[in-house]
Picture (cartoon, rainbow, N blue to C red):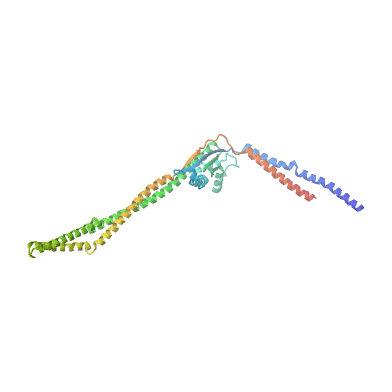
Length: 385
């Protein structure tokens, strides 16, 4: 019994001793001396914003990519948000506005790198004078942005600068470069299409000339003007001679029925029949063959040449129509930027957002301090126990 009482007294004594230890741990952990580092960091940043940070001006604009043959909105929404073809054009322009090419244009035209690398501005926000091309591009994208609204297809451009004039120049230069870029793309496509059609037209024109020359040479070599007309005239002549021969033979029979065979009229008719028969044979030979070449073969060859000429002429006509259509389509495919909101000279600097950044920093450091304090207090409490 005495032993049990002794153990209870020892447990109570340990419990009484532990309370002050834990309280001491919390007092040491939550002391102001450690929290003042949070206040010191916030104070340093506040001093930087108040004395060193350079003001940044922002100018913005809104544009829309429009083509000459733009479809109604109801037809556009069926494909992509923001207008089908116009949406892809807007994405193309947005990609250009984030490209290194635009950065080089701004360096050349308005001295983008020189402006932001100037030592007249604070060290934290300015561009390193020895920055690599990749770092310059990353910095360029932080100072100039182009965001696309997928629902409307409107591109919002935001340009920053240490002076109001430069921020306006950034946006104006970007607008001019984007306009030139989208026009160059449209003109290049149109030029390639028209060039291809013009090449085909020239080939068709050459084919027409060649086919026409071949047909004329063939007609000259064979002494014909038209194969069809020549064949028809020869056949008509033979048919007429055959009719005359039948008429004379009939007349001969009629004369011999009441005259002697030696009569002058009978002899004359028979002479005419003989001459006509001889001439008919000659004409039939001409119809069947000319210098060893059949008239039908000549006619067939002439027809082939005429068909080639007709085919080449049809191709030439089609090429002319295609060229005119390509010119119309090339005009309809041209793009241009519609300025929804033109850039303006900013009145005041809106960057950096000093109060917002200080408040965010203070809250973040306080939360981090509280979490670290709780972790340390838990570790010390378990270690003391």
